[in-house]
Length: 330
Length: 280
Image: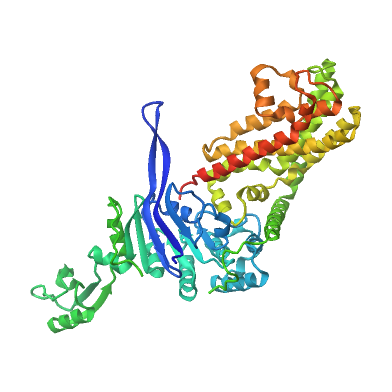
């Protein structure tokens, strides 16, 4: 059984649009427009899309905050809205721009309160808290009121708060938004550890694609409320022809650009001193070996394809669902 | 990585839930203690509104001997019933007035993500302990009014004097909840809610006979505010209703309160389903 099952999930909002000076016309807008999603236990799923694509709305329907207009949803086998409180015991949620903590109380008190709210046995609570304290380095600010914490500290607190009841699924909405580099690293490292060791299922929405590359094998891209890609990051690159690049710096420019089988030349820079090849159907080693036979190499580097570029191309073309079945994760 | 402790999905014993609510209340008390001085100031300031209610009635009876056919002592009984019920309801449920802010800022999301009822959480998370003073004062007004009204005590009237304020609390609480749910549909709904709750409260401080026409029909019987203080006071005093309702109308207060509570609960449930959340 999948941990998350959504079938033709749809959420409509009615908005009033100005039409003329006083008249307002009701219009129905589908924020989420028929999303199908199956997530297996232990999977780490990146759920991305441009602003207003329907990411947060989907997450809110999966967590029981919003009632879907139509479609089927099950999370941990429960219907999120009718069985909201039972589901809440089994999922954890971190909304980067909302807080689950008590503003005026020390972080430690919030954690203790959550133990009561989630009815967690004291020993299990203590064990999880100890683990989070170590991994997220909380000890320096456990006794500080939440309102005095820095954003990075607060986010580490939020993560802990969401995990103290041992949730089966962790939903993260923009967990690294506004964080500095060090805090981002800390959060990513922690989530990576969580994904590696446990069987916690992770659903992550973000605008920072580095989060996805570090953490998620599977990527679901949503635009205009529809899924436009569902598969591995590699499958996404395949589909849009983005390739790893080999950049070779030569001692002397070649008289004419070389032709290497399976690795077309993408660019000539620095007066022919730098050549860029795309790895289409051959490996980096073959390209380097072939080049070494033609010229003296000063430096070689391999550039990973830029996921941002691919995703940027994907955004804005959401005319219809283009689910890539072949690339879908198992 | 983090040990899990139980087979999923097994319902918890209700005691666990109560303990959770109790913990939330404790947190609220501690949060407010962080602002001690302003807490004391609020505690004193909150008595003011009820004092004003009593003074208003005193002033009115300074210029007239009867109000809508009722003497000062009879009217004071209505004031006492109304003030006591409203102050306690305001202490326990009045907080739901903050719902529009919760909805607008998205804080309501956090409420829905916890494994507890949304309404109890909302009430407990911000329980205004500073309104405690007003509830105590309201009760004092009621005790004085009952003592000085010259009631001809029967067992039934003893029961009624205990039940009527409770029914009033339930009734005002329902009004608070029902009017607040409007903000699920319309975020800037605070003024409308206030005009009904506070308007209704003022309405119950006077004999219904003072009012007239459609206004009386709507507030007294349409919305049921007559059953908070006016009808129970008539029953306690043993007076016939000048407006013609039978003597048992005073005893209908709990039933009216329960109907109001059922309607409010339904409005709340439907409202939560319509919650739109905000932004991302």
